[in-house]
Image 1: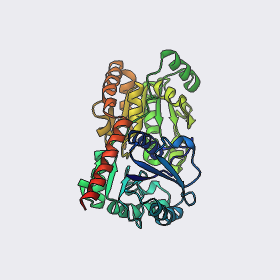
Image 2: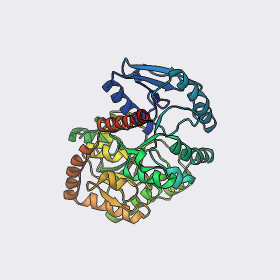
Image 3: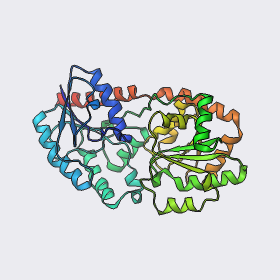
Image 4: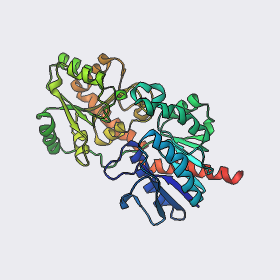
Length: 379
């Protein structure tokens, strides 16, 4: 069997959320199924580390697709031409895009529909592209995989697709996230927080991550506790807009907020694992991988009580209303002041994280491919 895969987001040292999903799943799937041929389609020169096994043939096709106009050309011109050469039994596209012109059985992975709910958080042209093409992709695809029951219901409700063709595969988290020794915690706290405890946030600094209310909540927390606890923010300021900037500049305790920028492994795992707790109070998530990373790191989690986050965290997190800074602050105060609560959440988090792994994700994604091929056989 021939399986073509859109691997344009496999970028050396630049893997983001969907890139990691592609990396973790395709590494496992290709190695687990040596009886099949896989064709990885890149939009630029690839790194050899992404050719995971001998049953992979790489293609470099077209020009880098990093703009809506180039997206259209790549998916509607380049991809159909490449697929015509390969003649695959299935085409997997992990980034939510597919080709409307290609005639081959297609499985796409739609991770979330944040652009439908918070379109103002995206650049105008990207927003228009997503909102115009994603419904068409969802209806064109023979199968859809997504990362939570919440996202499945959202896709079905927004686009009216048959729920029977949408498979939930969930996400995993890197095994590099693990508990940190007390000595290393002291070292990390000294390096990043002047030796004090700290809450940690990890993610792209864009509006839906709700930094505005996190900053306001941190000010309330500091005022009510008078503690020396810091807030460490890990991530690039890709979407540092006027509202986020204004909220930060208005903070009474902004000097206690530490921006690390993007951190590489293993430093990232050490900073997360040394935190007092994760504060992950997004207004919208299709899954929320940092929740799992915190569970694996043995730290408590504060997260939002909406979208996919309660589904992922289950009973192993402290929930807050992301639209109310006081609610977030109250959760931070509880975590700070109640050691028993912290230990209970850590214990529950260790159990909860066992329900998720990249091995399970890869297996579920392959099951979805199998359903796609079974459908083809029945035609």
